[in-house]
Length: 92
Image (cartoon, rainbow, N blue to C red):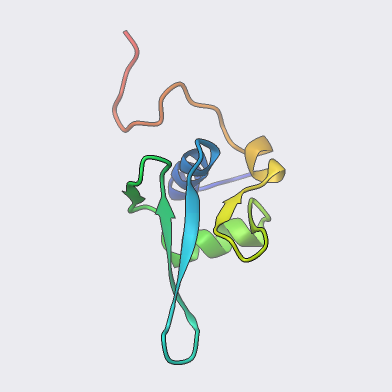
């Protein structure tokens, strides 16, 4: 299955214990954004509303009991393994 680089980065952050929190409009509660947080507390800039919607449509992320979105088993199975997901990192 084809997954974009930003979706891959988001799934890797989620697989390592991250979460996606939704940002809603205060007036009408409409969805205006999605923030992906790593387990260390860093915000992933690649994750935006379009990436979140694509991952949710493919059922790679899910929310449980109104909590933040986390990776599902389908998301883990479709994740391409990487030695290190840092950009430009090489193993010597």
